[in-house]
Amino acid sequence: MGGESATRITPGNALRPEDIALEVRTGLAKPTEDVAEYALRLGDDGLILAQRLGHWISRGPELEEDVALGNIALDQLGHARSFLTYAGGAWDKTEDELAYFRREHEFRSAAIFEQPNGDFAATIARQFIVSYYQFELYRRLTESTDATLAAIAAKAVKEVDYHRDHSAQWVLRLAGGTEESRARMIQGLKQMWPYVAELFQDDELTTRLTETGAAVAPSTLKADFDRLTGEILAEAELEVPVVPAAPGGGRHGRHSEHLGYLLAEMQVLAREYPGASW
Amino acid sequence: MIPTDSPTSQARPGTPVGVAPANAPEVSTGSTTERAWGLWEVFVRSSRGLSHVHAGSLHAPDAAMALRNARDLYTRRNEGVSIWVVPVDAIAASDPDAKGSFFESPQGKDYRHATYYTKSEGVKHL
Image (cartoon, rainbow over all chains, first blue to last red; front, top):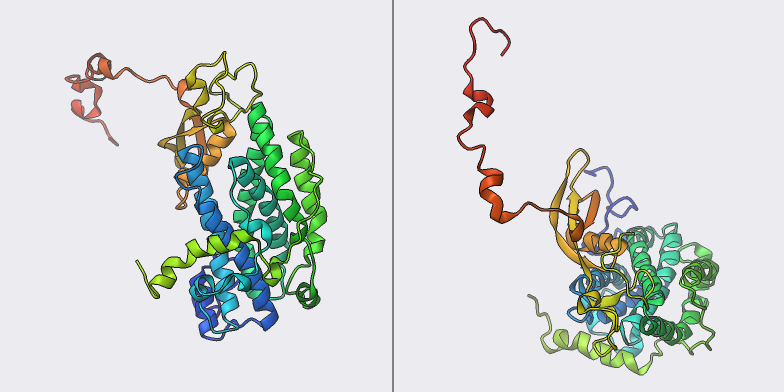
C-alpha cells in the first residue's frame, strides 16, 4: 500500500486488531458511543463463543475435529479482538481490559453464545445457528457507513462462510447417520433454538445506528437466516424446532447462570496476575 | 463422494461413525474398524503452475469432510490454492522390501545418462 493511504482500514486489506489499535491510538478511527456499544455486542458474541469452542480442544470426536473447532474458535477470537479494540477507543480501554476486567452484567453477548457445549451435536446446533446469523450480519455490515466496522466485517464474513459450511456438513451427517446421531442432532437443535429469537431483535441502539447506516437492523436478517437454515434442515430431513423463545436480555447485560462460570475461568489468570504475558 | 468403509446395513451414507459415543451398542454386522474414520492422503498445490505435492495424511468420514480437514490441517498458513484427497486404499504403493529389484537395477548402467556419451566430431549445436 505504501503511503497512498493514511489508513490500513479498507475492505481489501486483511485487517489485524493491531492496525485498529494503532488507528484508535492515533485518533484516525474513533467510534461514537453508540458505535462502540454496538461493536461491544458483536465482540462479546465472538469472545464468548471462542471461549466455549476452545473447550473442545482435545475433546473432539477425532483430532481433526479438535483442529476444526479450534480454528473456528480462533477466527471468532480474532473478530472479537478487532471489535473490542475498536469499541475500547470510545472509553480509552484496550481489548484486554474489556475482555478480562468487565463483570458479568457488563457483557453484551446474546444468550446463545454462552450456552454450554453439551454433546457434539449440541455444539454443532449452536454453530449452525450462530454461523448462519453471523454470515448474514457481516455480509451486510461490509456496507456500513462506519469504515472500521465495514472492514472488520469484510474480513470476518469470509471466515464465517466457512463456519457455516462446517456446521451444515455436520448437521447433514449427524442427521443422516445412525439413529443415535440423528436423535442427538434433533435434541441439540431443540436445545439451542429458543435462543434464535434474541439474535434478530431490534432495540433502540440498533434502530438509531441503522438510521445512520452504521449498523444492520437484526430483524432484517431473519428472512435469509430462515431460508438458508431451512434449506439445510430440509436436506437433512429435520424440522425447524417449534419451541418458545427464551427471554433474552443479553444485549443489556442480563445473562443466564452459565456466563459467570465461563468468565471466572476466562478471566482468572489476567486478574490473578495483572499484566501477565507469555 | 468416495466411501472409505462399507457402511453397515443400519447406517445411511455419510455415517459419522467416529462420533458415536463410547457406550453406543456395537452394530452386530460391523467390525471395530468400521467405527473409525478412514485414512486419507493429502496433496496440496502451493501455487498455479506447480504440481500437487504430498503434504501428509488425516482421518475423515468421507471425501467432503476430508477436504475440509485438509484445509484446516495443511493450508492454515496460506500454503495452497488447491487440495486433492485420496483414500489411502486407492493408492497402490511399491513394496519397500523389493527395493533391490525395483530401484537398484539402474546402478552401473551409465549408458542411460546422456553424460555417458562422448560428442562425435562435427556435431554442432550440442
